[in-house]
Image (cartoon, rainbow, N blue to C red; front, side, top):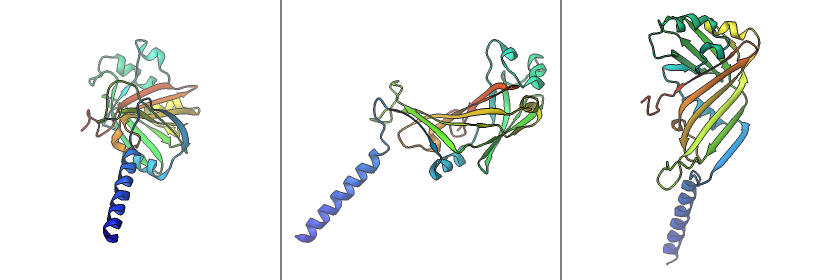
Length: 213
């Protein structure tokens, strides 16, 4: 009898701990969280698993290059009509080594340049229920971001002229998911570069997103 009671209590504790572990990742209606803190080992492992897709797009308004600084080297090619890819689309090769992103972008006319972005020590994470009806079973699917603000480490080729003085960058990984972050949550990225001689943005998808299986 004592043995049966022990087994029952053990199973009950195991069941309760399983429920508690599962709910640690549950998202709740009305969630809104914005925090800035030092990266931990798990978050760094997420970044090591994130890969950029092979194309990137230059963000551009109707003002065209009148609203962009630091990319004069590609303006003539873009405006010549010889840009054979989708408007503003670049070939992209990325790497993340020694806590540094290196993004090499190439135009259809084979002009290229590399941006070096040292990872800052602080991460700003943002997650929110945007009330759009998207869910993961019984839980709302949160919109989430990982944001990194830092100083551009350097630029070559088409980026060199805009980085003669220090410039800052904001790199954002965007996605959807529950309260637990995973690399598969993040499907898109956005990059802003700003400074005295630079003001431009790029965006694109991440490998593994619905658009990039």
